[in-house]
Image 1 (tube, one colour):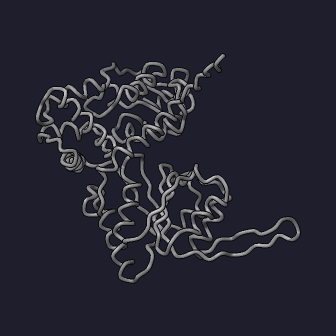
Image 2: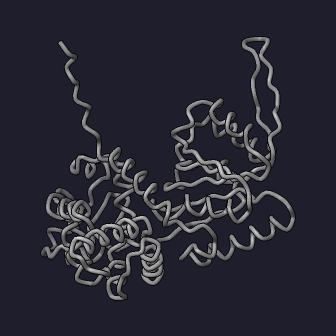
Image 3: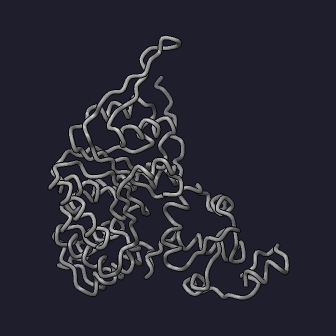
Length: 359
């Protein structure tokens, strides 16, 4: 008798989001800019980086360590790769959760060549023991290593070539101050402006050989959440819809139909984003509601709520993050076409004083 097949455990939404992001990164690889001149948007940050890269190359030195901050999908990994290409050096990449023990980090650092760009994603999740090792590596280009055990144990320092550490995070507040202080250059990503999103969409459409009209690119840019990763995902889906309709180009009609079928509205909100706002308004009278309570109501983890959904909702003026919890703004009521009244702006169980503060 054959073995009974055991069903795989149900995946959490956070795991599905992580896998989705990895799949999108693979699909976006052909669309990623290769040089700084091709990197659209984030102009002030890009101009400063160009100066720092040029100066480092003239001196023949490695670039100072680089700290990248911003929500997912804005181009942190892409920019790290672009920096390595501009410097003409090797590029090594890993993520903090993949580094479990000091030997994992030591194995990478002892193998780097001079001026290598070493990129660590989600650096806020780096373990304390690895942070301690990284401090010395970033400052002195040496590794502390313990040989032996017990009373005979001794520490030796292993020299490593000068390199450029690039750390990326979506949660800068969770990165320790000693680690932040060792980065000489800090780049903070913001959501992209509509004009930059249009330029990114037109560039991606050209690479995909999918002609797109001006009004279609403008409509698509408005629904891309100010995020290149989202824009690239949508342009590929619009290409599919245009192909199904046997349309030679992605037109406004194709985009309107495609976004409607994907349940994406004019602000770029997906079904799950609208569900978050609706729960706050209808179940918790507009808030405030704590992140953990909201995450439980959604069947989601707090990390996924804070990393994937809240940044754009806050940036769009639909959600407020207060010391007492999350609150829906008047714009959220308008966007969902829900009535707003005094009762919906209180926490329901609060005191009269609470109501005066919140109204």
